Image (cartoon, rainbow, N blue to C red; front, side, top):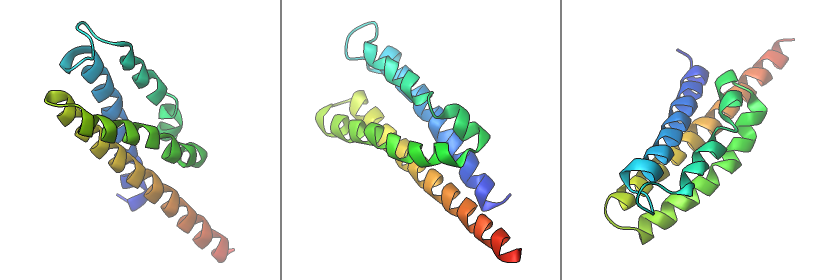
Length: 122
């Protein structure tokens, strides 16, 4: 397995885990209101880059690296402001966003290195 595919699968896994965490957190585990809250709709926003990430589109990787920072910020704020299970879920969100960001950046870097090497061979 190449490093490029490792970063690709890491980005896919962390994004899907973040979608599932968002749904479970806001609907079942620790919703803001009993019975769930509209914050579960943030999982829908996470679906925007999913197809491009699954297909390995570099442009999607590039813009999603900035997009994910909003979820990182939410996780940090709720990690410091919430308590109990919600706080632990917030820190898990932070970990998943950091993993996604790292995989995205390293994937794009590996693609650029491969493209540079291919251009040098011509």
